Image 1 (cartoon, rainbow, N blue to C red):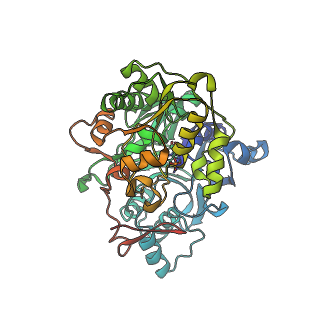
Image 2 (cartoon, rainbow, N blue to C red):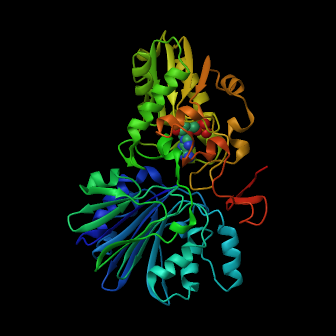
Image 3 (tube, rainbow, N blue to C red):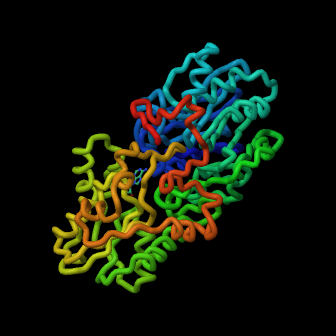
Length: 469
Ligand code: AMP
């Protein structure tokens, strides 16, 4: 997963982009980068690590100009490597261009094979690089036409920002898998994956980009294009943004993430009630849902687990042994809250089960009498191919185990997941899953990828192959 930010028409564009990326840091901690545009030239700076590690005053001084785009990366396609740090920037026949991408293309391998056959030389294994090669191959004269003809060849999830010497262009794929919001900071236009970035820089939120919309900002102002409007592609916003990924102080897809999570907790309390003494969130991801569960059930809410804020997301670390240790690094139990109590512990999702199992043990070790695990989303049964970093299907505990079996593995007294219907009610889509992609819970993938990638084997990560039945 990644976060993207763009600004044009501001004398301190790179500084504002830095702040914007800071607010989007939760969307990717592996690398960060900014490309600014000044006097007909693009100026890039990229590095591995957190935004605060990558940029110092020297680097910021080398990013002049009134326009900039930025990116924070969390590896989904391509391995962890500085060559994959974005925004990518190149010089081609039509001038300089930089691109920042959030999402995952499902036809990346097919595109790459075709482009390499036509002579392209790739410098990374990132799916985003194909977009630049498509632009370079396009015969269209006009920037927007070139973009449109290239974007038409992409399949999957793409929220994109492009920067040229004269234009800032924002794109949301026709399904609208990933968020992208438009705002205003005095005379400048700003774009960000999430509105929490606007709050930090005191920009005004204007609206979300529509699925399939291309926004172009240049010296003649801002205008929109809808080149996919004839395709009748249904909107499929990622429901997992609401479950876990987005920050709760953001509004994504027109809704407060905090309120949606609170509703998930309320519905979960109705679906899986239990006699208990205290509702405890797994911080930070379970907090809003735990508040909802406590309000609906009348059971007091308390902070029985404390999170250290100096460790990254443990999920990212590659080896099982490190991940086990990582949970302890990140969380500790508060004996005074838990001792002798019947505890409801709330988290947003179970992936491999490693974290929840550790947490249950920790809560029991702190003297809890009973531990009831409640998860504010349905069982995670399928990997995401549209930009959320998930392990292969075989590593997802719910892909091969029933809820009872998972409860035994977690060693909890009871386990309750939010139903799919409950999830859709929480995101205000009561009748059906219309409008959302919930493939990670249902296995119903809105964009097919078997054919696009030449068979039923698809490559998710450079080093990870997944077979779908
Ligand atoms: P696991 O130990 O593999 O079951 O991981 C479960 C934890 O990972 C939960 O606390 C979730 O909040 C968190 N989580 C779920 N999905 C992701 C993701 N795509 N990236 C990072 N963390 C995640």
